[in-house]
Length: 301
Image (cartoon, rainbow, N blue to C red; front, side, top):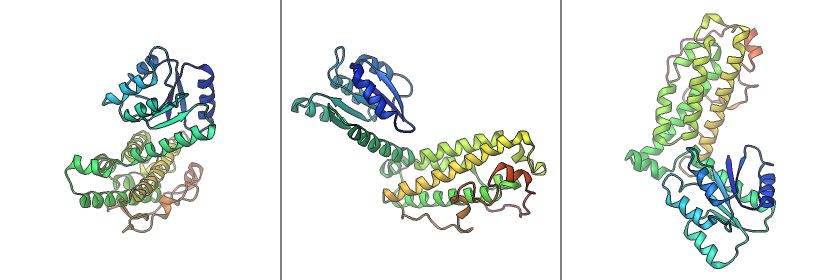
């Protein structure tokens, strides 16, 4: 998560940076003025969150907030006002321009982190699964059909991850049975954006794993072990994102709290950690294990 701090006071910037960098996965940028911050917002990838002071010389916080909210490309960026202005006029003006949160200086670490964690959770939910109403309007489908397709997608992802874990050592046969391209298309249609990213990463990783395409080359040569590690890591991320997608859909009331049952068996192997999954717990174990004797995978998810 990238956070832009906009404040002309060096001490305030330093305090906020110290608070924010105490959290994992947070990158902090500084801007000493409103105009410098606006230049930063013109870059292709805007910050995920902006913590904004109001009283600055060249462009105050309200002016910058108005610019951001007036831009279709930037209007979605969460803005936390962090200012010493506690007067009603400033607070009402900030609310009019849809400020996300308002913190009055002096602030506490707990207050800042509480606001940031709330925003991060909301951003994660949006990235995990697009709003149902927006998807239905975009695809011109009813809510019932959307939920049916999403349920089937989760089932396919669950079965696909399970199959890949169980049959990792048989190489191309297992991979061919899991239609990554069609799963990516369905994720894009239904707004499962984070899962789409993980599927694309898995597909890219697979293309670089030469050994996985040659069943006769098992166990992989030592120079292919790093490729195997990367592939196992990609599968692990797929499992984690699948669980997050299910939890998000349940939290939004779109689907039941439990994932749909798999027709091909429970997804216990896909739900476990790499150290407990049946096919290849570690590259070292995989190297010493003979190929599993399995039938040709015939059922696509």
